[in-house]
Image 1 (cartoon, rainbow, N blue to C red):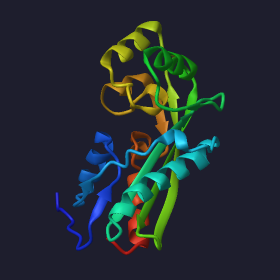
Image 2 (cartoon, rainbow, N blue to C red):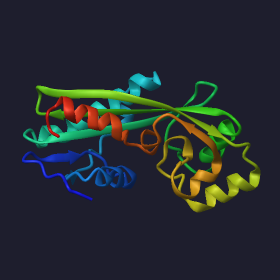
Image 3 (tube, one colour):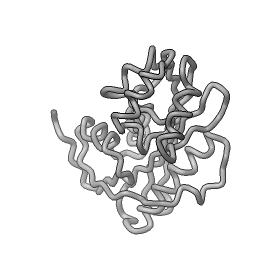
Image 4 (spheres, rainbow, N blue to C red):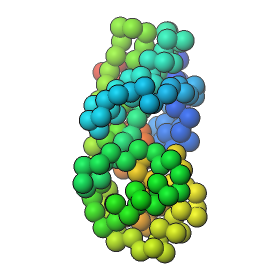
Length: 195
């Protein structure tokens, strides 16, 4: 893979290993500086608006400390077929409830990006996809919970790796469901003239 080296700093404002892997696959030189914002400070309840606001908050938090760098903020939210926002599960019981709600249904995943530098340069967008779950048996749910891979994941699932067996199909942007909509990021970077 050819690595792209920018004269300007590029920072991923996320501790997500999945996002790091996706960005590395783009061949981009970047640093990881997690934002560590308190997401409970975001009072927006509409899922799309909330994803956009959280992505901006994460990017802004890091950009304030690194005003000359380009900062990527991301947020991915899951909405059940009953239009319920499913954020990161609090515990195993919460994760089981989320999986039960999504069994045999279609969840919508909204992944927002905020690319900014300082106070003046801002490029933002959203990628939305559908995740079609199989009918999950109790054994399926027990197996997934025992992997521990649900922890820290919106909707209590991952579509990559072992989690693939929970789904019939993903309609839309696979990378966006993982947590970093790569095609959208390329578009925003081109608009910002940093590619």
